[in-house]
Length: 168
Image (cartoon, rainbow, N blue to C red):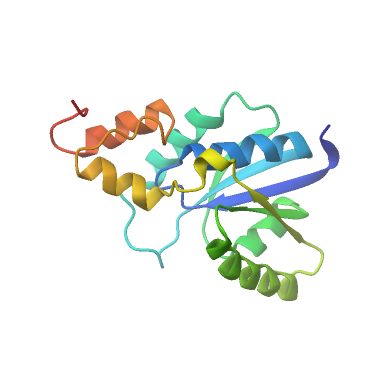
């Protein structure tokens, strides 16, 4: 049962959103009263494959049926955006132990900047441990089928970005 008092923020580039991201969002919605999925327009990352408006549309398509979830975009520090929207929890997804070190350091920095906002780590479901947006883009770019790694609209969008369309 969701804690109706807690508003959670789950932020990322989502270039593109994967089934692992969707799993974290679904589970967050079961725990927290409201979940804001924030798609960042982060100029420090290498240029995304999908433009911000495309990423927003793909995320909305993937999670639109999940009750209590809102999808927005933002620029800047995640912790500052969490304050702006009144989130008292930042959700971070973990796939493997290797993710934890960077995420832990980021959580400590966020705690220093905003002690009133907690970070909660959720492990993705086991079947999604190896899925990353980077890996999905690489597979699709080389002509592979990504249908089991991403929502259907994302697979179609990836195939559309690649010459040759859908895999055979």
